[in-house]
Length: 181
Image 1: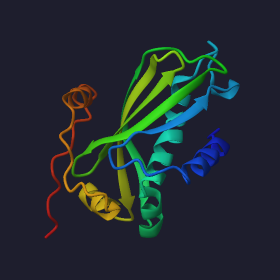
Image 2: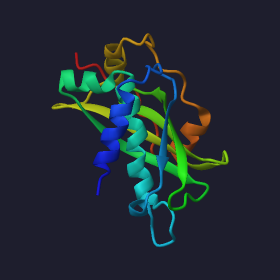
Image 3: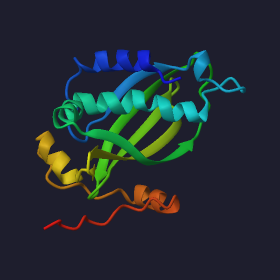
């Protein structure tokens, strides 16, 4: 089941959090509950992807993307993810989640998320390819970024390690969109 109560709590906490900026890192604290585990008594790999929503959506909220999405009647979708699992997160273990926007291309925003154990070890690392949508399909990321009024007219270069990772997963960045004119 989707963690609606945890998401509600995360959004409630994020409502009073300061804006982290377009490329700032949103940090949130979590715990691995019994309903998050698999038969090996550790955080289930599929549940990991669901729990990343608990960092990504509040990041969008603190930076104004969620209110922009509501105002414009847009949607938010995930178009792909690459994940590297490094360390186990056991039942009842606390962990920190860090979420940040890395860059964007013509159609997608690339969001890096990590989970960190209390001892400082990275438990897992993901890069999501996300898109904002409307009734006609994907909204150009330049339009979305411009509407946020955060002062970054162009994307920073995609980190080489991300481009290599995406290429290995056959998720290459999209070329610039063609003008409809």
